[in-house]
Image (cartoon, rainbow, N blue to C red; front, side, top):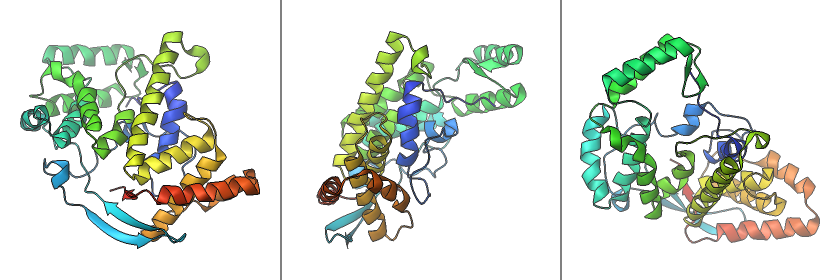
Length: 316
């Protein structure tokens, strides 16, 4: 089965930093290594679908808590919004009018749905030609295919799942995700940077054309903008991502004060939530890089983060 991962400059910066941003069940931030492509490209797919309800009507819980630094916070948990169950044709027909009417939850889930079908042909003859090319070249869309038979099986399964989704709509996944993000839906703000537009990306700076580099840098800036919006809404997931960016000097310039503040705030948030995740190792490393005055500044900054009235929205 082929593995689609090369995001080029964005892969080295955004993708690796977002490993932590997906809030894996580790005891600290994940190392800067590539994830299995589908785990990043489709972070919602394995979750259980839920009803198409507008975001304001979704039941969420809010529990008051006090972190170790004495600051009162609200621990907010929101039900997950997921890709509708296949086959996608009926779900597309149901979600489209809701999305067109401005329902941001429907816009988000429609974008996730279309993302599943983005590179699957709607015409059976075109599908057969694509399968034939896979056997002939052992490649698909520029990527090596280790097992053409398994790739064919995957393609035909996806073709059946996408039946009823118009071909001219399949490439609009990012338009709908962006509409939901621009309407302030937290999940869309977090996921838009993970669903890149189609295009030619490069892996190493030495291989990038000026156009490729400019495009990928623009996507990085977009990621900073939308994760920043999620951070303003109190997202712990966004806070983790910014901490990773500042710690590694990827996407954003290295800033040990900000990195320490982010991870210290996260440590206190998860402790207050009774969550076993902690960041002791990375905090110890960062502490060793900070002067006493810088450490004092970082601790004050962590308190500022925790004082956000919208803190803190936990991951599903």
